[in-house]
Image (tube, rainbow, N blue to C red; front, side, top):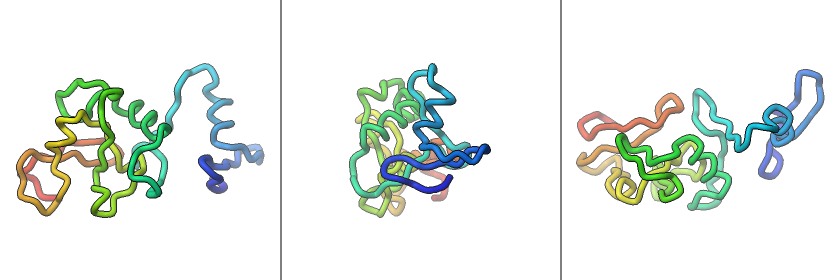
Length: 140
């Protein structure tokens, strides 16, 4: 990775050529359809705190990671869902895909945002790049 440039990155290939991330993905995956890059260690890749609401690009990446509500056992499609901050915006959480998850409106409402509130229903969190449900009885 050479640097970020606008909404993209510049990448130096092993031949020394510098290309945009979009060009690299296009070369490698031109016939694959929609592509999102998900880090094994951190989950989806992007960093933003400029907007509270997820961009179209972020929503597409999140739907690729979770085509349905990420709450265990829920099958509401992502296209009908909401995009929830794992660390709440009001607590300094960024609007980046590593801090967002697709939830249906019901589970977005019952997910416990405030880590200081008494436990009731549990909450979703990202651990090792994966979204997991944290039961109310576990420490935060």
